[in-house]
Image 1 (spheres, helix red, strand yellow):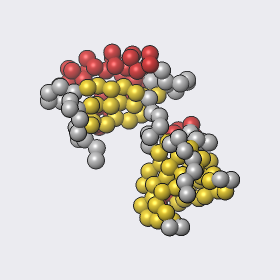
Image 2 (tube, rainbow, N blue to C red):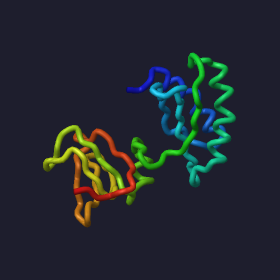
Image 3 (spheres, rainbow, N blue to C red):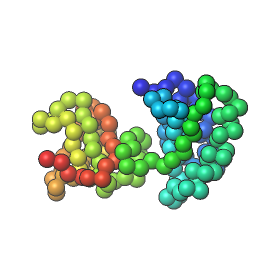
Image 4 (cartoon, one colour):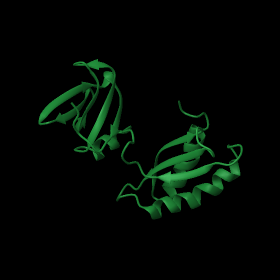
Length: 156
């Protein structure tokens, strides 16, 4: 479940990121940690996102967050780039990560499984398409709960 302050955080962070030439991809507020962690995922549209990009975003966003004072008490601001374990959400994600290993979690079983792993071939209007050991598997988008980057592209 998304924390209620996340839409406001994204509204604040996106123009700051854009002014730095960065795209704000996602934000989460992890309240189960002490202190809580506000994690903002960024991406550099023209190249790999580096540590310098994360540092620039931190330096620009931290004062803006302090000024609005949306978080009671101490918290940690973490700026990172999407990577393994990150959910693919946008059309750009699905284009960028074609050929990468992913895990697809389904709402309902298909051929007896709720999770499928393979290399992402594409996502179109109807399905997420994987290459699994040389075979193509089409998983209807209506069945798909989430698609996550992994390190392993095969399961049994």
